[in-house]
Length: 71
Image (cartoon, rainbow, N blue to C red; front, side, top):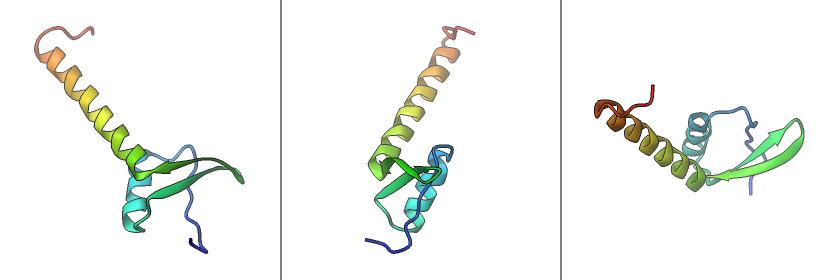
């Protein structure tokens, strides 16, 4: 347990949260909206989100290159 608890807001980015958790060697990060705890993110949540986002980007690029991009 920590005395000085590091928190983030719902508006903070995934990258910001990852940076904080890596620098402070934390596995869980409370999310506060004003003074109310609205959630907790884990390093696993963030890694899964990044993997999912990268996979979606790769899929879009492959469809674009193959002329199947709906744009």
